[in-house]
Structures are given as C-alpha cells and as structure tokens.
Length: 120
Image (tube, rainbow, N blue to C red; front, side, top):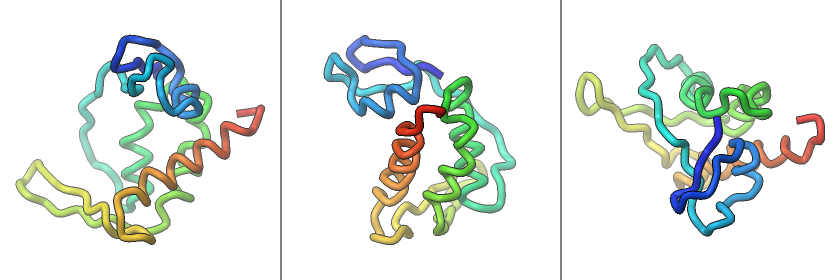
C-alpha cells in the first residue's frame, strides 16, 4: 500500500513512510482509504493484529515480516470489551507501562529494526 500526506504529498510506499515518520510537506501519512474488514479475527492479539494490519502492508517490503513484528510487539493481551453485538473496544492499557503507547511504540520499533536490513 502507498500512503499520502494529509497535506497532499505522496504517494509513497508504507515502509518509506514509516522510516521517514513525517511527510516532507509537514503532514501526516495516511492510507488513501481504509477497507472494511470482517471477522473472524483470531483468538490472540497477534493473530488479530496481523489480520487487521495485513491490508495496509499489501505489496510492501515489510509484509513478509509482519507476523514476526506483531508477535514480538504484542507479547501481552489487550482485552476486547463488547459494547454492542457488532461494536467492541480494545483496551489499550494492558501493556508493560499501562499506556496505549506500548502498542504503537513496540510495533514501530519492530518495523524500524527491519528497515535497517538492506534485504528487507
């Protein structure tokens, strides 16, 4: 997947956007569209995360490493609380520091480590 800047720059491959952090025009990188995904999602957090993230990594050089990145990043659970039959919340305060950043920061670190590899 290629992503675009909220200020119009792009498109660039997802891995390049992850490595850059911010778009050159000062905007944030976002996917041009988000596909609606249907379950079943999987029993564990890594299974659910891999399934949810795979469409964003389609065609990207990080796709092959995605299951490994997710498995390393999410070594803890995030309980799902169902609000309605088709609406749920993922509790993002169950990580090592009890903060939602545990999810994003650990995942980002796994991506960046692999992007240092010239074969990736």
